[in-house]
Image: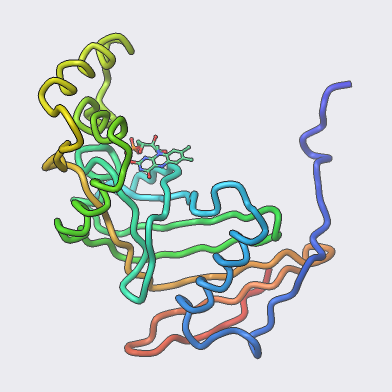
Length: 213
Ligand SMILES: Cc1cc2nc3c(=O)[nH]c(=O)nc-3n(C[C@H](O)[C@H](O)[C@H](O)COP(=O)(O)O)c2cc1C
């Protein structure tokens, strides 16, 4: 029997989200949810969809890994010459989405992006395995290439150039930080009457609103 996509549905009943109990600060609330996702052994809890847009408004989205967050925002690392890097260079606005199915939770973030300081990108790059660092030199992310062979052929060349552990940070590689303007927490509830609590930046403060599901 063929699977009927339209008939795939699941009831959400694990938890509730109450504006009376959330932190006044979305980063604190995010830290709590992230911690719970880690404890629930969500697979790759730091995987998030990153949406960017070209200056004419054409959107594009892909998964990247969250590598840090604090009051300044949410950090990921990438090749700045990639499609996302080029788009953020010209239109520094982004959206992030986390989906943690085990917890029936989604977090949506919108904000403006800045480039992470060189020293911070360098420190992160140096923490990566040597193979990943070599690959960052081998790959010009998002460029069309003739074959996989072409890519693999460049590996020994770069390995000769950077023997040992000292594989430096490529000039085009580094982090972006998304400074949030809105952060929305979504908790699945029964019969699709889900809870949605959105924080919106209001000067120095955060306005907390409940949204209809
Ligand atoms: C689980 C997962 C994690 C990923 N993490 C990253 C990442 O942290 N940085 C990155 O540049 N690409 C990452 N990628 C690859 C991106 O999804 C994407 O293919 C690549 O960055 C090129 O995107 P662009 O052409 O839109 O710039 C990841 C993909 C997956 C599936």
